[in-house]
Structure formats: C-alpha cells, structure tokens
Image 1: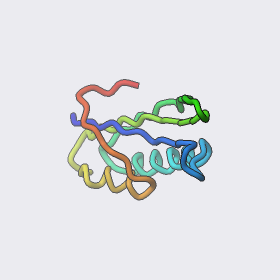
Image 2: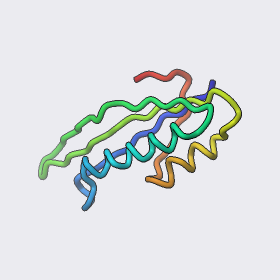
Image 3: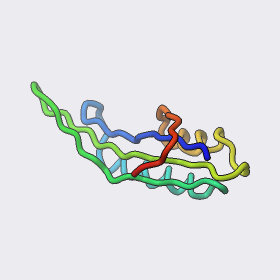
Length: 98
C-alpha cells in the first residue's frame, strides 16, 4: 500500500495564521479525505513549537498520514482534496506511524 505524509502548519510570523484557523483546515481536510473511497487517514495531535528571540515565534503543526488501499481513488484525487483547503508539500512514506 502506498502512503503519503504531510503537515498543516500555522505560523505566528504571518498575520491571520492562528491555531483555530489551522484546526478548521485540519477538520476540512480530514472530512474531504474520509469521503474518498479506498483511502485511510490518520491525523496526529496538534504540536506547539516556540522559538525566539528576538521575538517569540509560535508554530502549530498537525501530521497527516494518508494510505490508499485500492484503485477507486487516484493520488491526484487525494492531492486535490488537500490542496483545495491549503496546499502543502507531500512526502511518500513506507510506514504509517502516528
């Protein structure tokens, strides 16, 4: 079975990027992916990353692992479902681990 990994990220350095907005995106992506046949989705817990100085920067990240279990859905369908909410880089993985 083929799998991909990607993250949704919210970064305080960019105006309007909040944890709440990221969680709405995560919910929309998860719903879109679960509607596709022959696709399993695993969503990780939000992680907070803080670094600085001079100013504290805050990122929130959520990992997604998506596995295709059949041919009813193409990878283009998966990419489209995610990218219509917020485009991200995708990475192929061998094992799914959350």
